[in-house]
Image: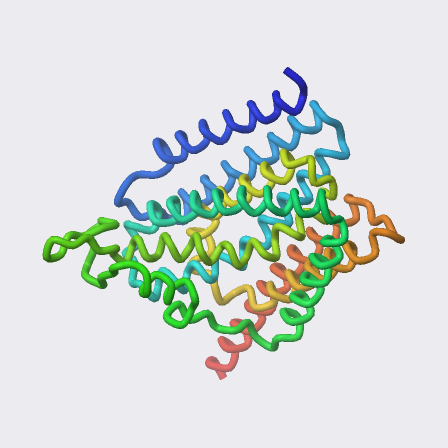
Length: 318
């Protein structure tokens, strides 16, 4: 057994064990997850991801470990933006908090399947047509400029989204109270409930996010044959989405400048892909840009939110 096969084996075992632990010990059916439990779960997934990074460092060296960590942090930071869309979808379908955990888990498992498919296709395209990296880079630069120039993030309307229209057109759906069920029998016919519709929407919407995130990862891990680092960084980041959702669902309006931080990351990654033939940007530099941009935008958002709250309180006192 070579090193790559060993890492694949360890990665598969860790993911299976973590899912069993998460489902069996940290999550209970029909139980609302509070901030404390969400914090424990978030630490669990982050520490597990960092432990796997240490394992990669031990087996394959510092360079691969830094690539994995950079790709993981990139996917993790881009996932934060996904969560705010998830919150809108849950609110639109009036999903009860006790059903959040199961619905999120199924949606995230669907997202993992889509990610594996996208990564496989993307790796094959990059291996056969290296020029496609410039196309990916141009897409990321365009997305970054568009996101940064927007005065405020466009409001996502589930009812007008392509995913919602697709389900309404090709599936039988019902808005009746699901009582925790994903399918209901009505007059002898099977209908998808609101919970199933949310699961499908989470999975389908992730396809849109993958169009930006997967090309971005190829800029961090340019070797298309090294799918291990791409798969592991993506899957660890996606699996942590559920606990992150419960941490952030009450703070959706407190990260006003996050989109600017994400935009800067996308601009940097896109530009890096466009100039790679002439300028080689170290992976460590990419890691630094990701950490500073996302961390800085979050901290600045919190600072501005606190300052605004303080100003409003002073105004009321006067």
